[in-house]
Every structure is written in C-alpha cells, then in structure tokens.
Length: 360
Ligand SMILES: Nc1ncnc2c1ncn2[C@@H]1O[C@H](COP(=O)(O)OP(=O)(O)OP(=O)(O)O)[C@@H](O)[C@H]1O
Ligand code: SF4
Ligand SMILES: [Mg+2]
Image (tube, rainbow, N blue to C red; front, side, top):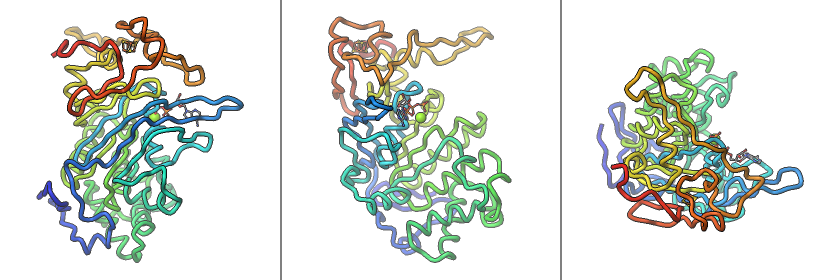
C-alpha cells in the first residue's frame, strides 16, 4: 500500500487509480490531513409534531478532518442521526434547520440548490446505514447497485461503471468481486452486505463517509472486520469518517476523536484517549462509567445512568443534563452552558466540569 499524505495517491495493494481512471471526478486531487471535510456549528433543528414544535437538536457541533474517524456518541435520542442527516439536508419532511452552519468539503450545505445537493449526496459524501438488507434493493444484483451509484454521479457508460464497481468492491475486501458481481443481497452474509454498502459509499471517491451504526447488526468478529476496513479506507483514501454509535467499544477501537451528544447538544469534543481517560463533561464520565465490565468477577456488571434523557417536546431552560448530574450547581438550571473551546481540538459545554486529569 502506498499513501501520500500531501496530495492524494489512491493506491493500495489491490491497485492504483489514476486521475484519468477516476473519470474526471471533480474533487480529485485534494489536500488531506489538515482539511476539514465536515464542519457543523451551532446546529438547531425545529420539528413540527402535530400542533407543537420541538427542538430535537438544539446546539450540535461536529468537525471531521480528512484522514480521521470521528466517533459521534450519545444515548438513544440524543440527536446523532438527525445531526448527520443535516449534513446532507436529508431530514424528515417535518424537520427544518433553524440555525447553524454546515459545511461539507468547503461547501455551504444550507445554500445549495437541488442540483448542488444531488452532487453532494453520493459523490462528496457517502452514507453507510445500520441495516444493509433494508438499504439494498433485494431485486437488483449487488454489482449493478454499486455500478448505478457510479453511473448516476459520474455520468459514465455502463461498462466503465461496472469496472469501477468491481474496483470498489475489491477495495472493500469483497472476495471475487468480478465473479460475484451478479449475486443478490440475500445470497450474502451480513458482513458482506455491509461491505457492499461501504463499496457504494466510497465508489465515487467521496471526501466524507457518514456511517450510522454500521456494525450494530453484526456479530463481534464481523464488527471488528468492518471497523478495520473503515480504518484502512481512511488511511488509503484519506477520507474522513463520521462514525455514529452508542457503543463505546466501537469508539475505543476505531475512532481518533470523539464528539459526545446529550439532549440534542454537543457536550464534549476531544481525542478518544481523552474521552476515556481525561473526560471533562460529567455526562461523558457517566457514559464511560456505565460501560459493562466484569470487575474481577465472572458476573457482568451493568450500570446505567440514573434518571431519564430530556424530552425534546418539553425543553427546560438550563443544562439538559442537570437533572441527572452529580456536579450540578444552582446556575446550571438557569441557562444551557455555552459550547466553548478549552484547548487544541477540545471543547466542552459545562460550567462545573470534571477536574482535568482526574482519571488519568
Ligand atoms: N421526524 C421526526 N419528528 C420529530 N421528532 C423526531 C423525528 N425524528 C427523530 N425525532 C426525535 O429527535 C430526537 C433525536 O433523534 P435521532 O434519531 O437523531 O437520535 P439518535 O441519537 O440517532 O438515537 P439512536 O441512538 O436511537 O439512533 C429523538 O428524540 C427522536 O425521537
Ligand atoms: S453544566 Fe452543570 S448540570 Fe450541566 S453537566 Fe455541567 S455541572 Fe452538570
Ligand atoms: Mg440514530
């Protein structure tokens, strides 16, 4: 595998893609490493629910750079999926963006027209969902499905699209990609179906891949293989990956940095090591403490976080974690704490954080 961190070199043990072969892909070549491929700042979403309005996302911040995996973590309902869908403006019909900046590959997503959005989806950003069987067309061969994604976005002939599909399947480690081009989704294992989804996501050389719970439906061994695959694609192609999960094991194994959401707000952004060893937000601390352990005995210890998550239809004026927080102060219930930078690549929304180095 060769990998040039300056200007892209799409090269691995399988093959090298030349610029000509990339079919005039508009985003080639591109700079890497320090490039921000996704920047979401101060995102708020309004949802119409019958006659009322709720704010399922109130202040989300996410940053993904080329060549890294950022884990987006938080309890169910914390706003991870809606935040990610905002990056593609693929929100449900009853939800609209009320505030915030969204940039993908340097493009202001909120300002894009339909043509711009179509180009963004699938060619600048690739999506991988939790459920490959529900996301793949059961009546179309897997090779054709990958080739269609190429044809739609690159406007190439069928033969060229088929060739790219075989390459993309090979790149994601799909065995005998050419021979199994005509297989149907139901003929594949869950792990191979997820590889097909990833091939579709990367087939057009996107700058960003958003993977929403990509390993939740898989057994532990296959889960590890898929995470390894994502890591190798990041290294080989220089893409950025936003990896959405509620599984801290997945974060620990695969992510370079972590964004923690709670009650529709980003509450902490830090490196993966900091999230586990030197977290500053009380929710991150509680989340890490609630991960299952064996604690020296044969019995699995499961600890939850006491209390319940906030209801977006009944917003409270203060910090959303206040009712469950062990570090709360009287000021915590008057206004939500601002999301503030506290160091290089670190930011936090809390007025009484866990002391620095408390767990190192
Ligand atoms: N179309 C919708 N209309 C109104 N509220 C919605 C809609 N879709 C989602 N929500 C609510 O928005 C909140 C955030 O949802 P979201 O799916 O982003 O959470 P999540 O963090 O991805 O959760 P999970 O881990 O379960 O996937 C939840 O309270 C959810 O019920
Ligand atoms: S702002 Fe207050 S209530 Fe919220 S997490 Fe920090 S200490 Fe806890
Ligand atoms: Mg979700």
